[in-house]
Length: 219
Image (cartoon, rainbow, N blue to C red; front, side, top):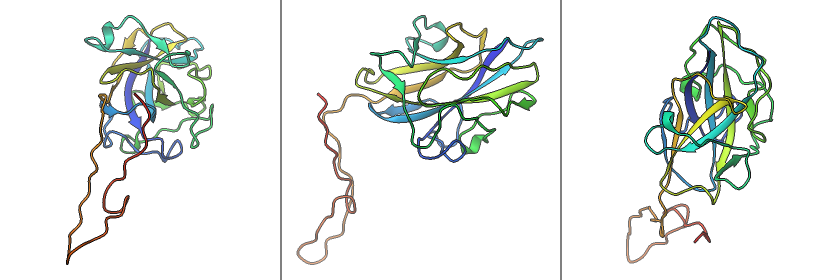
């Protein structure tokens, strides 16, 4: 029985072992206030909780807007599909098809739910949503890592669920669905910073004394 066990959101700021947690080193934690057109990495744990080895399987990353809970979602979309709100992100820190390692939870990994980690797995994906073909025995587990981003079609202030399937066929068990909530639409951004004025005047430097605004042409 293939089972999705845990998830961990990671920043796209390092290689497979070096990227940091985006949720304060906590797995199975929803990422919130996620901005459009931003990159993120998703780590997912998969194991076999059955009594026989799985058939050779390619895993596919999918998403669905959450209406009530992820387990009742009925419309799931391949992240590789065109014209949707999520897509793969060709990360400068990753090579598509390289192997994941058993990263600790403190470094953005997930808890082991079986005995043996599959060391040759092709589980890193940044240009396609489908992994290499893998067979998982009853004592094995592996981690998959996907580099993705949202685009202008992603809804504002919406929670999305993420899962892997056997090329579109759902697993029989999902212990945890990855969850992410997008940021609400904002018409302004607050510039934060402070400086102590001595004398009659002082000079405030953008990026030093306050956070400089970025250009934004989205409607």
